[in-house]
Length: 412
Image (cartoon, rainbow, N blue to C red; front, side):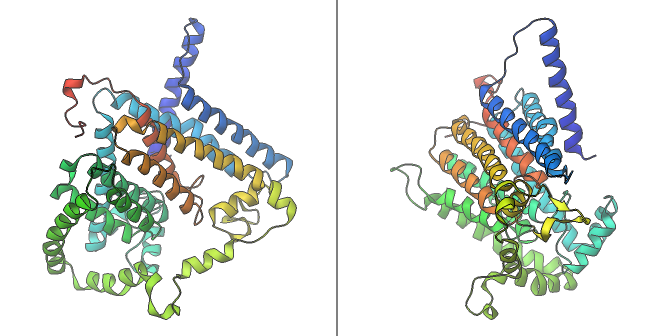
């Protein structure tokens, strides 16, 4: 069992005990209506997913169990952690902690890439270390690095969320545009290049947050210019240092594997088309099923003949949901995420009064809905989903710290 499940389960038991205790002593139970609506909606699709599996005769409970995890682990874990943290930290503090976590992950990835002995040591700590070593070698020696359940696509999205948070902090407070935070941005960006190209979208959206003025008084590109200046100052000596200490074989991996893979979209041998091998493969995974499947699905999420493969061999997010419970279930799923992002938009004022917060909420929602085209971000991506609920909890919490002590989270 992973740490997230253990923490989530512990807080779920705490909340359940508190709820039952309140009923026994007849004390009114207070539940925020905003989160209650989301919980009820998720509960409905949990039940619907179970019905689909039973009525279709597939008995494929993967979707049911995944949605149930939202209620048992993800939501209790996120709100439980924030409930504890709000006694000591402001919402801005917690956002910075998330960024710091992505920076630490970036450092782990870079050390694993640069020092083979470190890579094999970290792999030895994981129960699937041997499989990751094999995948790492097959992918050119630069992917499947880091400590994550899915160290590629899922991780790239979480890392790019860290970039978006950093750019939001830059936008909220110009004092945050420091050499330290600029270095953090650069480290996270490098980790995105080594994990998944979907993260490039989040990287771009982060810069959009920084570019678009929050009000008519803000000078366009001023903060971006200040930030890019610091990036340039850091980059040159950093490149010289890296080239001086990196082993020759690692430099070869970067030049021959990392760079061509990262910029495959712009290669000249594509005949002028903006495409990659994975994007061409993705196109084949979207097809028109029969009318019954399109409407109510087949009840299969995994291949009934080979549980290591997805049903009809499609890894595309929207298509996998359509094949399981059709447009009807997919519509329910989208409504739930619209509700979540609407609450993030609605409660974004927790971090300040800047209009950049609204823009951030909209772009984050767009990022998730676009990324779901590639893979199942809404159900099968463990880390991004937990990160999203953690953000929701941060925004909905009311800090118990006295105003005079809120120095770290104070915005200009």
